[in-house]
Length: 243
Image 1: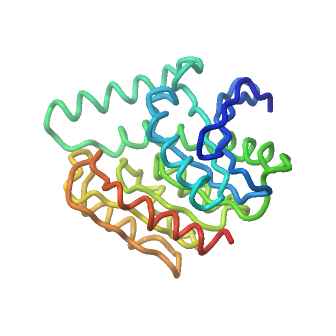
Image 2: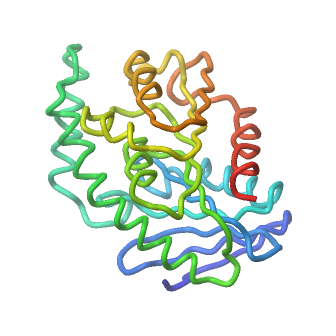
């Protein structure tokens, strides 16, 4: 891990950009150390485009709750090398949506499953590097991003003890089955009128999770309309499980 830039904000939060091999990332840390870590996922739209939302959540966690937070660029996104198969899958999805018909399972599988296979090992490698830093200590949480990546991480990564998931992306049938193996506490957000997400499929996924503690927060509105007030309940969820 190599840090490439840093800035400290008025709230005391230190933001540092880093590279891990070819993978760019950002780490936010509070003034106190060592701090529990929240890994913040995001959709494959690029870190630069997602930065305002990612930084807003990360700085809130650091300044108000004393958590460290980190994110990394997904394969094929941002400034990382183009990934032909992923771009083809996105094009197929756009055509299916524009045609007005249902999105077939083969398209969903091609779009999501290879991303999960590539991204999850990178997240685990990043976690290895982050936990080697003296300012990081204690349990780890995961939140946001492509929900299938969160599912896989919750199953295979024992260092992650709680997850806040956003039910706003297409989920392959194989990942719904994998969700039955998730046992860590979950805090799940659902936008009731999400134009790109089938509500019943999201409810079925929530039902499939094997966790004994799982909470669903559903709000009216479209995909990008998650209320700002949901940030605080999510932070309190991590406070319960990372302290």
